[in-house]
Image 1: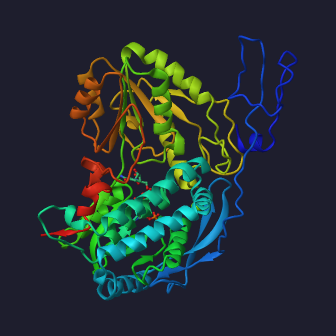
Image 2: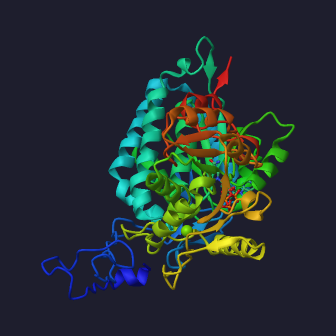
Image 3: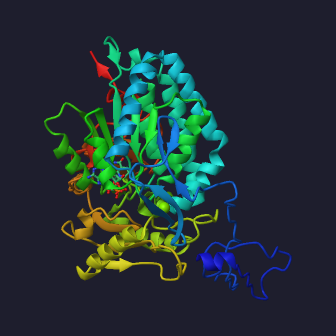
Length: 518
Ligand code: NAP
Ligand code: MG
């Protein structure tokens, strides 16, 4: 189950196994088929994605005014491959002077070019960008996996297709903005400052850049410190698409660079995705200015399973909701609420499924759970798990899963029968850690689901549409999935309640925060 085991895959079968089967035939998980008396100890053959398609520069510059430029700060920091703990490249650390240059470029591009183009012309650039993203999809996916640690299956099948979809979708809006606010007049805002996190580096960049450009604004974007590489590749794609200079500028750096972006006097609107803690800092620093602000913050989303749900499918939904992508999803279904009558059965099914998850090399196409993005995040997850154990939570982890020796990995795990006051019932872990509690009635499920300072997402599993509808009406969450989880679409607005932030991204609602509506 580990990288080392996938790289040296053993195929051991006992003599009673049917002979003609190919040696490469694989079983899923450990344990074997007890009913037929066969014992197995083998795994999927490794299927490692080649990294040859990706050319990583040892030292990466800033993208300002259409060119890659040396930072005025003359400083760089390292970005790591979390799967191995090895350094991938150096990234420029932009200071205030660099941010000033990026802002001037964005401001010039806004006044001289971008705001003068028709919606149709802006849309053509966005369509072109979307098509190049599709053409370079494999390169983007491999780079994202190298820098972030997420399984290639996810970056290839989820992130990159959604990135292209966001550009296509917003390209379509660019010449139809008058329909975004029917009967009103809309216009662009100017320069927008955008700061994004490390969990979906490319996707968050697309969520922010595509609507801003469609609406006629220009952009200064700061990616997360640990995952800047894919945003810089996106900058190359903007060059390839012939996007006019200065329309998008990318300034890499740490929190101080982010603060310089959001606090810059040139910025008319700030869009931030990240932690509630930093969201609050930004909100305080923008108070009293006339800058617009949207915040997409953390979550502790409830995943509710009723007794009449298709349980095996619900188990898959729970696994997808919290364990795939290492729990690095802001809307992860991290609080499982199960109807009491089926709780034991459900938890046993979940344990059995967890034993079969493959944790390891993110570049292996069979990997379900890749690497935790950084050593710091891994320490944070471990410390929260230790808190849960100290508080006496019923802890489970599939100990058969061996973790790779190098790199940052964490086993999927849960705490069962937890009370609402349990620290992990309330605190966002941002790792593959689930809490489980039970309910008896739909009303109780709603009350427990809403007992959080967050309100980003929720999932409901039931065979009865009327029940799903009724429960959904009672939940205070920005996104609610029924009989599925973690499904995204650019046409659908995304955003939170309470400490999960405000404002929406995607759909018609998402456009409105990038437009002046008169
Ligand atoms: P974070 O620490 O808040 O960082 C987010 C971004 O803000 C990074 O680019 C960060 O730079 C930058 N930053 C840090 N301090 C700043 C400051 N004072 N002013 C301006 N920018 C600053 O969050 P994270 O740990 O990277 O991401 C995880 C969090 O994001 C989780 O809480 C998750 O729930 C949330 N998230 C929410 C959504 C959503 O749509 N609601 C989506 C994804 C993630 P550095 O990288 O250098 O720290
Ligand atoms: Mg990295």
